Image (cartoon, rainbow, N blue to C red; front, side, top):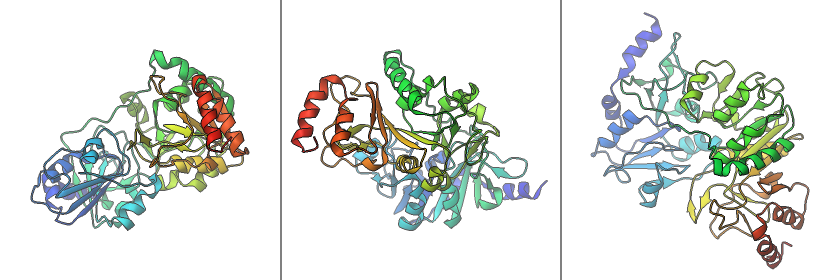
Length: 431
């Protein structure tokens, strides 16, 4: 038996035993993939008091009596798993960019315990963090206690996310393995004309040999299905999804012209389908690296022909984007959108693109707005957006005055809203 195997056996505990290690007043940090078995047992300990839990994105949370009191969760990216708890004031929202989550967890929140979800170890005693390298790979070095939970559903993906068994204090070797969150590309036929139109405009903007980043969201992912004429694209992105696998299989993504890690698609988390997870297993063309590396704006800036493509909820006539606030409520979070937009916009051959449909799905509201509602955060300032693309066309914003920007945005708004937008723009003194 190898030394690491003896160490693995010695460190292996049950989920209940791991949960018993948590003490009153502990402050737990985890990544974007929750250790569900351990978390379930911790929450079951109703006697715990003043335990804080920071998960930048929560994908699993029991609605138990002590959640919000003795066990207080917090997140930086709201979703279906956290909306209700947040609305009930049982979960805190902490604004923060993805690459700053380590600083938030370690320096600001003083977390002393780290939970990690990982693969089974390879023959050398290394585990992969599967579908999310995250900030916690680095942050766990500051923790007094590191507990890892294995999940055989995770693909083993190479990169700086790997840990050796020696870096972990205790391991919960899961017998019950939890399925991964599945997210498929939206190919709904009724929206195909929108995707096709935006995809056509993107194809005109994106040059051959571009290194691309694609944000979360059905619109920009589906739109990339229409890049048939592109050659030698590379990938340096926050989230790797099925569309990037498909473009790789079709030979459109080769990574041959990248500035760094040539031949390899670099990202910090993977969201997609079982087919993607299976394809990623021990795939030497992929590297899932720590978010502190991938989302560094200087690294993004240095990429060859860096193109950042991100969704927005709405864009105002000044050219600012809101990507996280909907109907007067916090809807998601910042993630890495600003890192990629600023790095790409500053890069000499790069560009920052925001894509959105010109109206809401029912056609009742324009997504190009005169100004944001009071209290709406600005996710992207006007200085880091080069282009805004809707199914109506392309608005080129960089190098233009406020009035010129507003006029360009009017042209990509839906025609039925343009007169009102013009009126409001003049009233606000923009036009």
